[in-house]
Image (tube, rainbow, N blue to C red; front, top):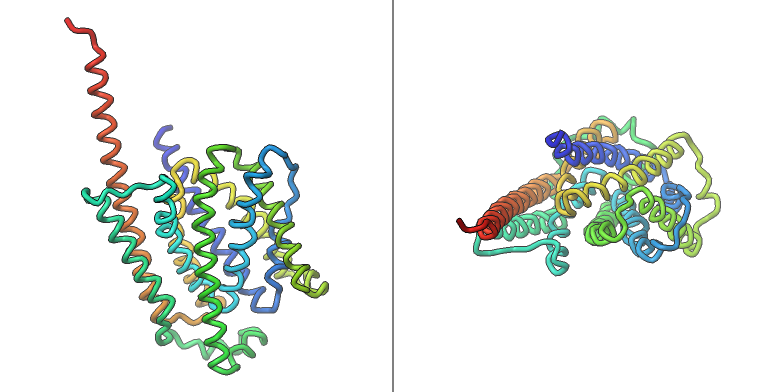
Length: 339
């Protein structure tokens, strides 16, 4: 039974990553057809819960960071780049989470031990991969010209535009993804703090999504979004909103909050590379998105850096556990009565 409990966080994160993969693919499809970002965020998060005053103050800021702002930036990034490329930025979340966790005391680094050195090396490798993703796009790796007949008209018009405008949109998408990555990393830190003060994942997720929906709706109305944009026009938009709201927001947020409580923020964020792998397997043959050399090189560096960091974290955990057991053994011997 104990071994089964130890595997539950792993299985939960794999299921969450597959669910998020499907969310990204559906998002790219409806955004490519012209759906408004803020309208989608509002519909996705609108699962009205019963509010409790005790935790409103704790979760309002979490809703801004993890629900409203993060999703808006990632939606903008996915629209202007691709689902697979956006997932590459998600892979940076564990390393950025680790860096942010240091001043809060959630993570430690001992440069004298092997685990601490691995954490530092993994961080630098991941940052190098992030720079490659941001600054180097590279040549395309696949010929998608034979897919043109199946690509929606909106996508064909965007591909037929000027290369300068395409490059500008790509740059905007990269900046948006960088901002979304920073906000999401901070959300893991914030969620770790909230989980200690209010460990009820279902209630906290319900309240956070309610706040997020209200914040996105207010932002959408204040920016002058056309009222016709709030009407879901086809089955794909309805399916995407329902799936993203029920699975992508509610169930995945509950699962991630539970995993943060069980194994910590870095463990939870460590499964993000699975989303990119799954997205790539669907993105290229189904949505006919192009894959560039810079994306592959940068993604590989980010993954290598990520798992070097995780290896270092595992070494630290093993060393700390051994030290703790040794101290407990010594204390037990000291407390034994002398014969």
